[in-house]
Every structure is written in structure tokens, then in C-alpha cells.
Length: 276
Ligand SMILES: NC(=O)c1ccc[n+]([C@@H]2O[C@H](COP(=O)([O-])OP(=O)(O)OC[C@H]3O[C@@H](n4cnc5c(N)ncnc54)[C@H](O)[C@@H]3O)[C@@H](O)[C@H]2O)c1
Image: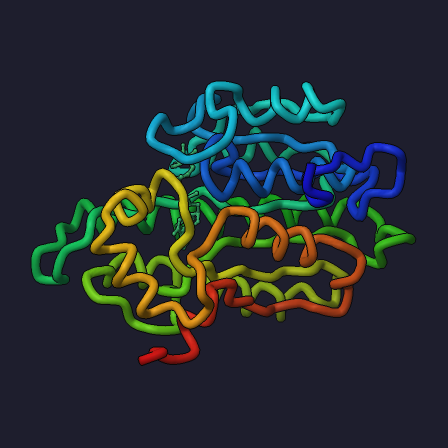
């Protein structure tokens, strides 16, 4: 078994004793993030529209819900249903002592030129990616402000939000509204971090390139698209959910205490230039 798959439940995990919420935890990046956080000893509230993983995803054991995988390995986890487009459901899920919020749930709608996009698509992507992230951030901060600064971590709490390579780093053809909604996530991260650094609250973001998940499944099942993606990714392989989960774990760890307001590109160099 690869060492980063070992559950450190003996007090040696980097997130030992912490309580974390991961939104969109049933599939893809969110599932891998929830598993990685649990392996580092945190108790995880797995939160999603539904318990079951997307049937078209690439996850191991995808017929077993994320929180059950964690429990089957001796970790601590529960499932709480939460639709990020409903403020009342976000408030209900973030109402107890908490150390870590990972805003992962997001909506990406099929590619098209901007002129063909509908107002409904704008509203749907902004409702979840921008407003849902904003509300979850605000509820977590309200909770953190009721808590003391943790003596070990030196932080009151941490928020990591999943933006995108498209979220302000570079333009990607036929993703205008998605990109704008993810740029909102990246700028919320920077601005909210500035407001709450004085409160010892760490707020960071991760901007993935294309990663193998159900949402990006069409790309990874089409050989011609794989060839194109390889051409635009300087690193010699494409992204896996574990690449994102490792970055999130680092940003949630005590090693990242003096890091706030950053949007970390985890994209195999996709946003640094075209490797042709
Ligand atoms: N996969 C990629 O290539 C990629 C690249 C950049 C950014 N991202 C971002 O990473 C995040 C995860 O994407 P993924 O590829 O794992 O997607 P995915 O579709 O595989 O998984 C998303 C999960 O979020 C849940 N979800 C969707 N809408 C929700 C809502 N309203 N409330 C609660 N949960 C909801 C889904 O049920 C699903 O379990 C998203 O924010 C996405 O925009 C993904």
C-alpha cells in the first residue's frame, strides 16, 4: 500500500483531533480530499447532495459512500446532506465546533462559446460556485470567531476553497461563465483572508488543472482530447484527485500556519505557458 494511503489514527497524523467539513465529498476531488484528511487523523463531515458517488467517476470502491470508506478503515466520519444552492442547508451543516472547511463542491456545465450560454447557466454556476462558497465561508468564520485560537496550530480555523486554473489564472476557450464563477472563488479567498488574518483564520484556495474525475470524464475517455490535454500540460502526466488532495492537506496543516490568501495552482504547469 502506498504510504499516502495509510490511515494515521495513532495521534501521528498531521490533522489529528481536528474536525473538518468537505463539501461535494461523494465524488471526484472532494472524495479524495475527504479520504486524505481522514487519513491524517481528522474527523470528517462528508457533505454532498447525495451519499453515492457519481456512477461515471473513476474512484476506487465508488459503490461505497466516502464516509463508509473512512469508517471501514478505522477513521471517523459522518455524512450530512447539503445542497450548496440552499443557504439554510449550509447553515445547518456548519453549526458545531469546526477546524477545517473545504469548499470543494462546484458545478461545471458543458463547453460552449459565450454567445451560446444561457442566463440559467450563469445563475446555476454562480449559485453553487460563487454564492455557495461565499455562504459556507461566512458561516465557518462565524463559527471560528466563537472558538479560541488553537494552541497547537496557532489558528482559529482554516478554509480551503477549490477554484480552478480557469479562475483568473488563464482564459480557457468555451468556459467563460464557469471561469468567472471560479474567479469569484479566488478573489473571495484573497479578500476574506485579508479581512480575517487578524482573527488567526487561514483562508486559501487551490486552482486545479484538468483532473481525472466524473465531471471531466469525457476528456479522459476521449483519446483525441487526452492528446490535446497532454500538449497543453508541461508536466508529463495529467492530474489525479490525489494531486489536489495532497495540496489541500498541506494548506490545512500546521506547516501552513503563516500562509493565507493564496490561490495555489496545482495543474502540472498548465498555467505557466504552452510547452510547444
Ligand atoms: N475535475 C477537474 O478537472 C477540475 C478542474 C478544476 C476545478 N475543479 C473543481 O473541483 C471541484 C470538484 O470537481 P470534481 O471534478 O471532483 O467534480 P465531480 O462532479 O466529480 O464531483 C462533484 C461533487 O460535488 C457534488 N455537488 C454538486 N453540486 C452540489 C451542490 N449544489 N451541493 C453539494 N454538493 C454538490 C456532486 O454530487 C459530486 O459528488 C469543483 O469545484 C470543480 O469545479 C475540477
